[in-house]
Image (cartoon, rainbow, N blue to C red; front, side):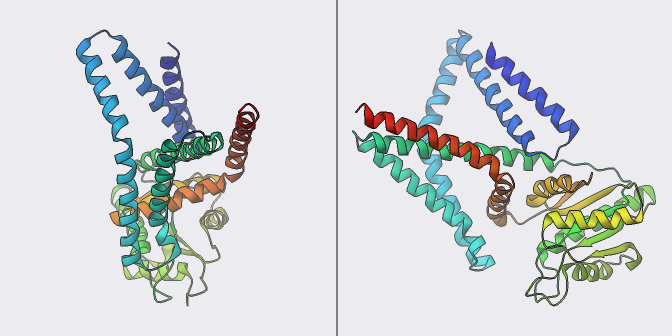
Length: 344
C-alpha cells in the first residue's frame, strides 16, 4: 500500500536528517508528513480490518473530530484573544505583545467569512476566494505544526560535559543596565551547566556573553551579562564579552570569531530561552557553528506570543521559498476563477 510506504519513507528520512543535523526546519516538515501518512495508514488498517467494533469506534471518532472543528477554531481564537489581553496587561502595550490578540481576531473574521460563504450560493468568484483563503491558511497551519514539532524535539538536547565555551545570547535590558528575568534565566541555565560540567569533569568552560548596546541602554547587553555572572560567583577570567552584535545571527557569527581566535578546534554550546532555542540553532548552523543549544524555561503565559514571533521570524528567513510557492497557488486559483467566469 502506497500510504504505508510513504509513512515509512518519511519516518526514515526524518531519522537520517536528524542524525546529520537536528538544526533544520525541513526535519519538522518531514516528521509532519510522516505522522500524517502514519495516521492515514492507521485509519485505513482500522477500516479495512473488517472488525465491526473497531470500524464503529474509528468512524465515531472521525465524525466527532469533524464536528468539533468549528468549536476547536473558535476555542483557539478565544484562547489567543485572552492571551493577547494578558500579554498587554503584564508586558505592556507593545505591538509585538498584540500578536496573539491580532491572530485570534483574524481567525474569527476568517471563520465568519467562511461560514457566510456557505450561506451565500451562486458566486464562483466568492467560492474561489474562500478556497484560496482556506488553502493559504492550510499551508501556514502545516508549516506552523512543523515548526512546533521541530521546536519541541529540539528541547531534548543532551550535550556532553566537555564544552570549551558557553555562548549566552543577549536580550533587552531593564533600566538600561540590568538583566531582566528573561535574560537572567539564560544566564542561570548556562551557569548550571558550567557548574555541573566542573563537578563531573573538573573542566571549566569559558562564557561568551553576546549582545550589543541598544538605543535605550546605557551599557551593552554583554556588559550587563558579565556583571550578572560575576555577581553569581563566576571568575571574570572565564568571561569573554562580545558587545557588537544586534541580532541572533550576529551573536553566532561574532561569538564564533572570538572562539576561532582562541583555539582552532573547540566544543561549544549556546544558552537561550526554550522558545528561541530552535531558531537560534538555525542561525548557529548558518554561521558555521557546530554548537547545539540548551534552553531556559519561560513563563507559560508568554509562550504563545513568543512561539508566534519565532514562527514569523523563521518564515521570513525562508521568505523567497514561501513567496514562490504562494505565487504558484495564486496563479492556480486565478486560472480557476477565469475558467469559472468563462464557462458560467
